[in-house]
Image (tube, rainbow, N blue to C red):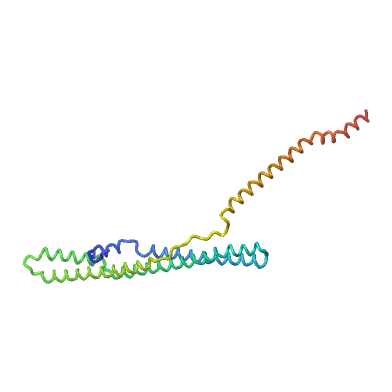
Length: 227
C-alpha cells in the first residue's frame, strides 16, 4: 500500500481506531502456552517409553515401540519450537505496532491543524493571515510525511514478523491398517464369545430334564419305600 498517498487523517486514524496490540499480545501468550504444553508432553512421553523399555517391557516388541514413537517425539519437540517461534513473532508484531502508534501524529493534533486552517482561511479577507496559513500548511505537510514514514516502517516490520515456518502434520506411528485389523479382531472375538455362550446355554437346556429326573429319583424311591 502506498501510505505516502494517504493523508495523515487516514494513516493516524486507522492506527488509533484499530484494536491495538492487545490481540497480538494475547496470541503470543497463547502460542507460548502451547509451546510449553507440547514440550512437557514430549518430556512425559519420553519418560514413559524409556521406563517401559528399560525396566518393565523388554524384548523385540519394546524395541519396535521405541523406534515407532521416536519420530512422534521429534515432531512434538519441533512443533513446540515452532509454537515458540510464533509467539516470538507475535510479540515482534505487537512491538512494531506500538512503535508505529507512537510515531504517527495523534488524530486530535491533525484535526486541530485543519480546523485552525479553515478558520483562518474564512477570515483571511485581506490576506492578513497568509503567513499563518502557510505555516499551518507546512505543519500539515510534515504530519503527512511523518505518518507515511511511520507506516512504511510498520509495514516492513509487520511483514518480517509474519514470516513463519509452515507446520507439518504429525507422523503415523502405527500401521494404517491397524485400526481395521483391531476392529475385525474385536468383532470376531465378540462373535466367537456369543456363539460359545449360545452353545453352552443350549447344552444346559438340553440336559436340564435329565438333571431334574436325576434329582427327583431319590425322592420317588423314598416315597415308594414308605408306601
